[in-house]
Image 1 (cartoon, rainbow, N blue to C red):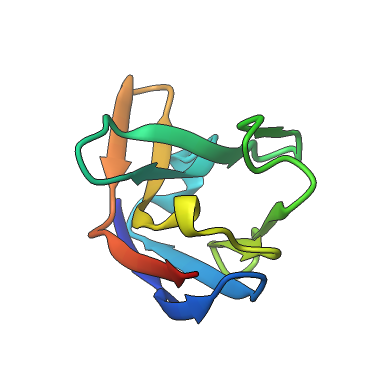
Image 2 (tube, rainbow, N blue to C red; image 1 turned 30 degrees about the vertical axis):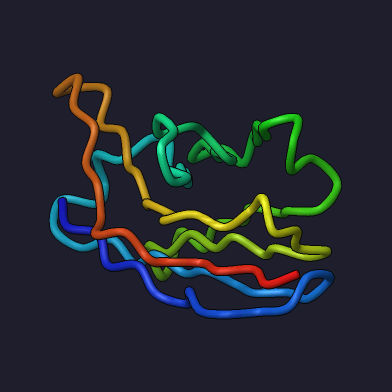
Length: 116
C-alpha cells in the first residue's frame, strides 16, 4: 500500500484547507484510513479516522471543525479543515490500516501552517 497526500499549505486563522490522500497498491485490504498530525515538539496524534464502512472518529480538538470523508471508488480519503487555528499548525500524515497484516502504512507528511 502506498499513500500520496496533498493539499497542505499556508492559511490564515479562520480559513479552510482540504487534504487529500490517494491510496494505491493492494487497496482492497485497507480497512481504516485516517489523518494524524505532529506539531513541533509533540508526539504524533490522531486527528480523524474513517472505516471502510464510513464510521468516523475525531480528536476532541478538531470535532465540529474538521470533516473526514472517503471515496472508496477513488481509494482516496479527504480531510476538510475549517475554522483553522494556529494550534492546528503541524505536519499531517495520512494513514491506512490493513487488519489482515496488522500493519499501518504512512504517507509522507504534508505541512499545514496557520498564521494568526
